[in-house]
Image (cartoon, rainbow, N blue to C red):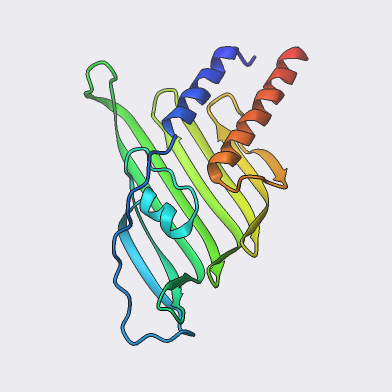
Length: 209
C-alpha cells in the first residue's frame, strides 16, 4: 500500500535537483581557414551546466557545479559567428560514498550515484528532432530517481514531450506520460508535469482502495 510519507523523498529529490544561476562561457578556440559550408566538431571535458545552457539554450542540471564531457558540431556564418549544426551530446557521471548528514563523514558500503546525459540535434542553429535528458540518481539510502525525458522539436519550436521513468521510490518504474502543446520547452518543466500527473494518479489509487 502506498503511504503519503512515500511522497516525501520525491519532494526532497526535486529540491535537490534545482538549478543554480549561470555564468559566462569559456572561450573555445575555433579552427583556422574555415568556410561557411564546412562543419567542424568540438570536443570538451570540463564545461559546467551553466556554460552548456548558454551554448545549447537548454536547461542543464548543475546544482553542484558538475563538469560535463561531450562534443558538438558547428558552422561559421558570414559574420564569423558559430552556428550549431548536427548532433551533440554530453554527460556527467559520479560515484562516491554516501556522507552522514550529522558528521559529514563517508559511510562504508553506501555509494551515491549520479549520472546525467543530454543529446539533441541542430540544423543551421535551430533545434530539430528529439532532445533527450537521461538521469539516474541514487543516494544509497532513500532518494532514488531514474528517467528519460524526450522533447520533440521542429524548426526550433517544441511540439510534444515524453517522460519515462520514476521520480522517487513510490512512482512505479517506467511510468510514462506524454504531453502535447508544451508551453515551456524544458526538461525541468517536463519533470514538474510528470510529478503533477503522478500526484493525481497517486490520489486516485489511494481513493480506490
